[in-house]
Image (cartoon, rainbow, N blue to C red; front, side, top):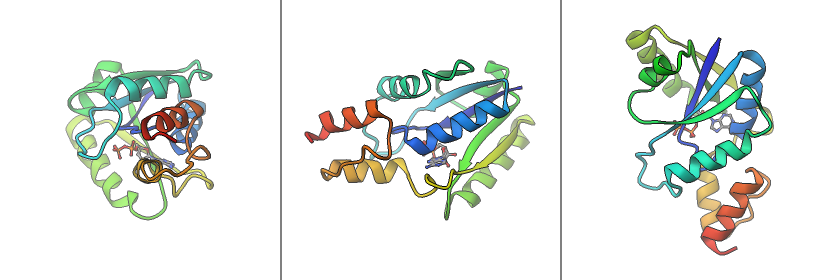
Length: 157
Ligand code: ADP
C-alpha cells in the first residue's frame, strides 16, 4: 500500500525524517505531502520546504515528495494512497491527531496510522526550531544539514 505523510515541514526536522524512514519500512511507497502553510509565523516558502524534504529523503527510493494544495484526503485519492501516516509526540499531539483521523476517515474512508515519535525526537518541533534559530541558537543537532545551513543563512549565524 501507498501512504501519505503530511505536514507543513517548516522546516523538516530529524523527527520528521525518523517518521518518514520508519513509515517507508512499513509501506510499499510513501508520498510526503508538503502542505500550504497557513500559520502566520512560517518562514520557508513551499518551494524551499519541498526542496529541504527532497534533500532529506534522497536516500529513500520508495519516498516521493509533492506539494499539497487543498484537502488532504483529495490529495491521497489523487495519489492512489490508502493511508495517512502521522507522527505522535509527547504531550499535545494526540487529541488533534485523533480528531483529524476521524474527520478524514468520515470524509473519505482513508485510515490514519499514528506512529510514536522516536525516543530522541519526541520533543522536537518545527516551531521550537524556528524560534531557537531566529534567536541565534545552534539547531544543527535537530535538523538535516541543508536546513541547518538555510537557517544560518536566514538568521546570519
Ligand atoms: P502540521 O503543521 O500539519 O502539524 P508538522 O510539519 O508540524 O505539520 O508535522 C507533521 C507531522 O509530523 C505531524 O504528524 C506531527 O505530529 C509529526 N511530527 C512533527 N515533529 C515530529 C517529531 N519530532 N517526531 C515525530 N513526529 C513529528
